[in-house]
Image 1 (cartoon, rainbow, N blue to C red):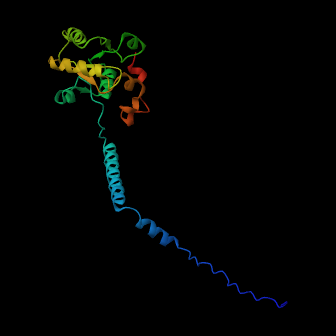
Image 2: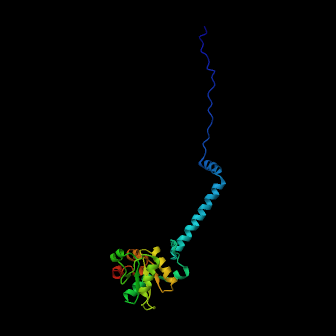
Image 3: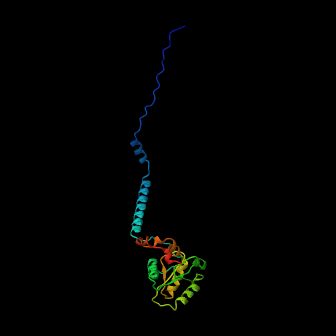
Length: 207
C-alpha cells in the first residue's frame, strides 16, 4: 500500500478577464445603434415645433390675435365684417359722454333682465329673418348718423353674426360689438386698455 500523498494535478481555473467599459464607450455604442432616420425625424420635429412656438409668441407680443372659430353656415363677408366691428371701449366712452348710440341686445328676455349694457333694448333672436325684420323696423326711424350696435352672449355667438350678415345684406348701417355680454361684463381686462383698469367700474355701464 502506497502511503505517499498524491500530488494535486488539477490545473487552476482560469476566469475570463472582464474589461470595464467606460461610459463614453457605452454612449458611442448606443448612438451607433440608433437609426439615422429616427435622428433626422427628431431634428425635424424639434425645428418645426420651435419655429411654430417662436412665431406664436411673437404674434401674441405684437397684439395679433390668433384665428378664432368660424361661424357655421352663416359666414360673414370679411370685407363687410371687418368694418362692422365696434370697439367696446369706444362704446363706454360714448355712454359716459351721453352721446347718441343705439344698442341692441339679441339675447333671450330672461338673460336680458338679469343684466345688459346700459340703454340697450332687447330684440331676442328667434329666427334669422324674423329678428332681422324686427331690428330694421326698430331702427327705421332713427337718425342714420347714430351708431347702431348689437351684441349677443359671447363674441363667438353665431346668432349675432348671422343677424349682422343679414342686416349688412340689406344695406343697413349696423355694427357688432367686438365682445359679447359675457366678455363685456365679466372679462373687462380682456378689452379695456390697461391704463384704465384701476379707475374703471363696469357697474356704471350695465343695468
